[in-house]
Length: 332
Image 1 (cartoon, rainbow, N blue to C red):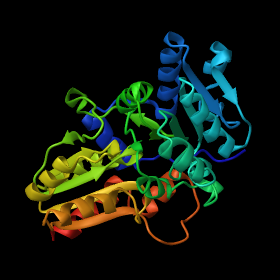
Image 2 (cartoon, helix red, strand yellow):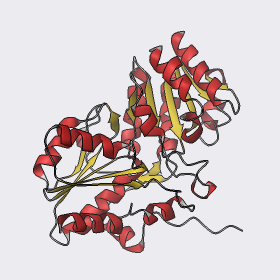
Image 3 (cartoon, rainbow, N blue to C red):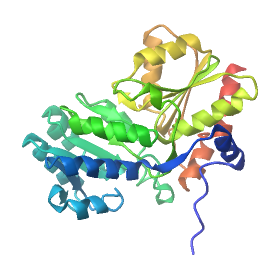
């Protein structure tokens, strides 16, 4: 019998979660599947396309309820993107769903040409992204996807941090008139504060206000940044936390405000440090003439360690303790 997966949170971080009163929600993938099914039930033009991934994409109930609105292509990701593009060109609202590691590497040419260059309103959904597959190792890690997709014109890139952002992202994608990529992990998410700020593509979401250091994060890393902010507050350090669900377009206004207001800026992402959100934020700050103390927290340019997602996060400092230490070091 295999050992249970380690918790994403240390005992101290779990205690901080309770103090903050953060309600544990579902995995964003589950929220995505239910939101898509509700939309597709009301709109027969919505079609899901999967590459032997309806199980991992939580789309089995969708397929059972709407068998005429799902296309299974088997393990053929390039075909998946081509079919998603073709359906979109024919007036369908198509969602191509596949593990992000294969979708954005094996099918990159199809995403670039069939979806983006052809300017069809297809949606590609990268599931089990980042290091969600854990011990399956580098072949199944998707820590390159934001870098390669940021370099492609005419593509909106969304990375939701909780169930609220997921629902809003999928509702947006269902109405979008241009290509969209949405990225999901596998872990259960906590409902973050800041829903009153709403969700808007191209805008960051303020999760916590602060003036000493700003954490700019997205996806499954945001809750760790919020925990670090609470941990730092007990030491007299004020930390701003921004969720950045919209990687492209980027909320340059919120980024520049963080660079002006705070002594240090730390970006946090479940992605390689090359080409991701950290470099996008750094470019925004430097081109505006701002140079706060700055650090990108992600996966360095090396053979990524193998283990559960929680182990990998802690190894690279994506945790309450690791991010708090990074902030203290920068501010020292």
